Length: 484
Image (cartoon, rainbow, N blue to C red):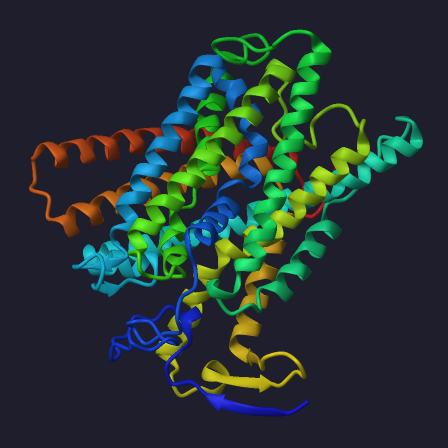
């Protein structure tokens, strides 16, 4: 095994630095911006999106529909799917500045905001985006520990014949998930995550299908469809609780569709021709249709199974443990999926941290030096000390916070509420208006602004309900002593 070092004065692709270089479009190894040839297509982009979208959010949809009822629940889900698709198309049009085919590329969401809007909006966007991504890492750590404990509990329950309550502490499972993420976080960037996204996408279909099947089986077992047109009934909860929980349900559904925050980064992995915007339009349509079908099926059959008693986590709250092996498969699939989804979401944040470090300390060997380790039969492995240390610290911090705040449904709702309007609606709409130079007070401008304001109102309501839920959880939970 040999070892040598090289120094990078310009950071690699994972750093997402916007630099102008001489076009090398004739080279089969480089794209028009001088970076290594992108190889992504409709299917890899769809896999990335599905990996990001069909995540832990799907498990809380039965509960969300339960709060809203048979009319408002599915209607709100369809509304969010349409808004997400439409604003994603607007956002994908902002990947290139000027000409949609040959214009300058924007490598990150923040780059697109900087070019199209500029000023203080760039800082606001960066703060909201990266806080949201950090929050997703916390939410996924909590969700994975719940699924790992569900496997252990279902086996314990089966072996004891239901006599042992099988209580256990969540902390070891969160720590185990964190260790796995420390190792995987050393993958440099999005372009090397295709395989992980494909595995995670398959896993998401696996547990969603099992959840759907168990829901259908429960409806057949009950011999009736439970639930009501207006959701959970007054009496089961108070009037005030129903209002807050209905608002919280909006946040849960919003979180289930939140992927716009990483759309530009996914688009930057796609090859051209055809234009990246056309590829992303197809990938977005495929992904949103597929996920909406899964969401409607899992959410509706889950609600039909349990009615007012719909659990906040469909699989781990099923209330029965047979066939326990099937639940084990589903929860294993959830954990594998969340391992991949964690990386898909966190890579943009890693890239931002490393880009800033390279900009501030361009002459630091710790930040810019790669250590090349040659492995027989494989291509050389590049290890960057700053990348290794910074990403490890990030995973450790997110894991510790997860152990402090293990409120799965409320954390999911709050993340969805805080990220939906600014990242999925406001910035894409404003950037599109700026790039296409849509006249103020024109019909199109008015329609886009009405969409933005309506989504802002929904976000405020969802955030209020989620904060109320978190406050209730804080009163009953002791830090680092979470057990199920």
